[in-house]
Image (cartoon, rainbow, N blue to C red; front, side):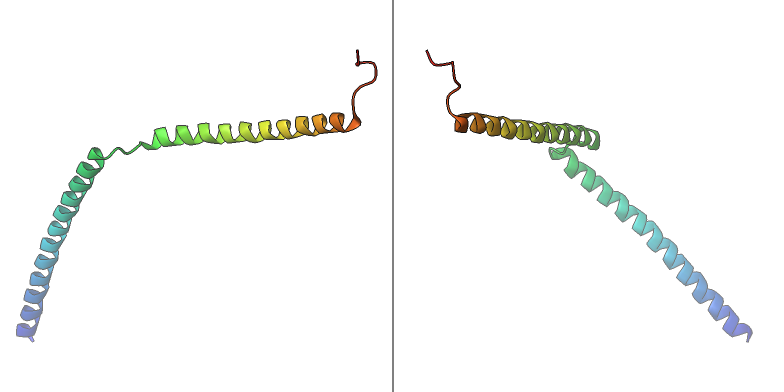
Length: 94
């Protein structure tokens, strides 16, 4: 019984050591990958989050204004079409 417990203790110690080594290796791999990604991203022309959000807000505002102006132009075109359909205004002919 004592031998089995010692064997199980040894196996648990070896497994724990292997897990510790794998954990350290995992951390090292993650650090290397992070460095590689940071290096690649720094070489790319990538916009920051704050700049992206600012431009997104500007684009949203511009889109809203464009839609408002399109509605106004359509209303003015309808007025011009209605006036043209009525014909010349009396008294404006020389």
